[in-house]
Image (cartoon, rainbow, N blue to C red; front, side, top):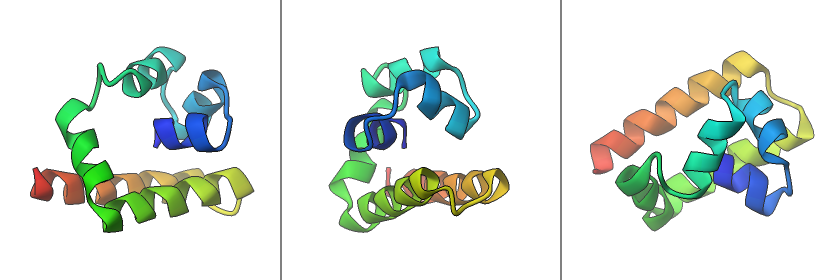
Length: 85
């Protein structure tokens, strides 16, 4: 999600971190694949998961989703990634 917000939506790492409830350092590590690693590759390899990440990022950018809903959807994405890896 961090990569999606920074790369596709041109968010700064700080702004992405605020939207995701994490730190700029964590966002930087996700972008550089120092965090997430193999599970992130699994998301990118799965068209369905990748589409869901893009859709969620679009909603974050539009501002039509609450922070609680973002957290809930991120948890669902994490569970889906864990079942695929």
